[in-house]
Image (cartoon, rainbow, N blue to C red):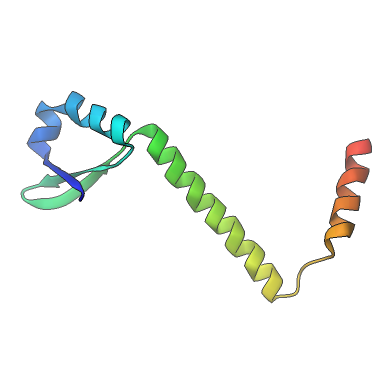
Amino acid sequence: MPTIKSSADLRNGYNEISNFCHTFNEPVFITKNGKGDLAVLSIEAYDQLVGKTELYSLIQEGLNDVKKENTRPFSEAISDIKKRRKK
């Protein structure tokens, strides 16, 4: 169940909301005039979310390469990596 607070709660109870976000690693949804306005989350949760998004993007890029047959054998790729490490 999402945690929902008003903009007044954010203004008057910042520390409580901050503690919640850090303790439970979940966002708090902030309403303004009774409607959704913001999602507040800890920096750690934000970094984790951004990291997942970047990972999913890279996975999709790889899947697109497979579809386009823009790939090469694994053994060849490893061989190239080993050669570069020796330099």
